[in-house]
Length: 219
Image (cartoon, rainbow, N blue to C red; front, side):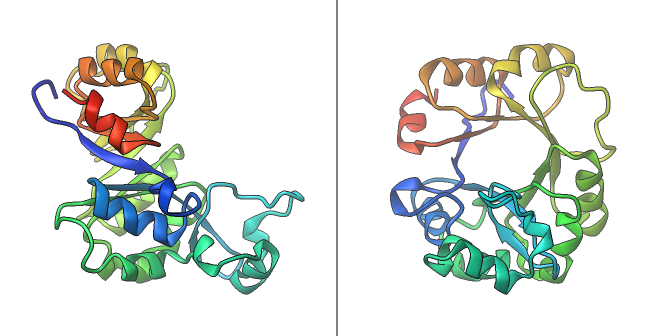
């Protein structure tokens, strides 16, 4: 809300440290700012992994591949396609106690796939474009915040119990008018104009590719 100094999350991790959604980029984000926003998809054998795209370049769905096969198909450094479990372990000792790991649930079933990791989710906040994923996260992890991702103000349903709306920055003025009391996060704050919208709307968390620049734009 207005007057609250916004917290800064590195979009898909701190890119200077490694590829997006890599384990090392997330650890570097925790060392440099208030945390990271990353993407979670699920393999055929139920392993939640950090990856933005739910398909490989040849069109193969990640959900059709067991984790070992996904790793072989992707190749490269295993840290570039980390299990959520491994990232959570790597974050031990990094960042402030109230740092945020924003897990965007990119695929149906992602929230339920995270249930075995419940004891390690103390700094996690869930978001998703899928209302059912938000509902599943709230049911499975009632102690953790979860919110709906929105890209325009014409959405009609907010899952009961949702803690926040994570709003594409261009939609912030309309969403703030429609939801004057909502807790707003925003993405992707990559220029001064987006930062101005975020400040005007009172977004309490800013997600962007360059957290150093966001720190300069922040009120």
